[in-house]
Length: 173
Image 1 (tube, helix red, strand yellow):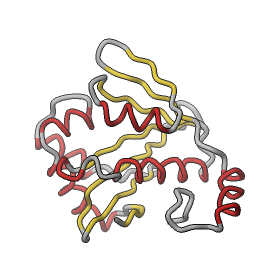
Image 2 (cartoon, one colour):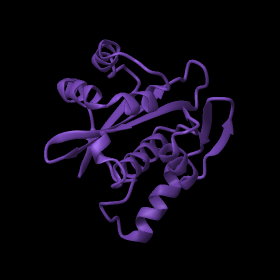
Image 3 (cartoon, one colour):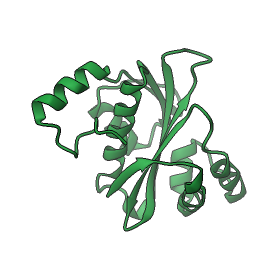
């Protein structure tokens, strides 16, 4: 698996990934039942200025995406995260690897708070959020998760202690 930042030249990969999501995975990602046309429009506009999108590639195909949306107009130290993994590639660590990358990127960018919203029945996202010490607040249908990434100083210290192993989340793009 290779995780890297996605750019405009990856637009076709992003569209193919989002279109590969089945109805249940789309509902989990977007917290609603949405059409294929809506997914395609979203995918075509997914690389906005100020946002960071990273993808997990296996054998050259994009299998998972994390989007870190810049919502600094609302809160200067806050971002919103969203994840998707191809259904047949779930439960093998792609979401966890993307989560680690997202936390590392947020820490390097000075983002102190990451917000996520997911459906209350999305046990995979609940598990990942709790693994990384998120605070959860549940309402009738959704769960709001709040995370606080480690600042870059702590990540640099940890990198020094581990010898800078390349598979750690704080590796650079």
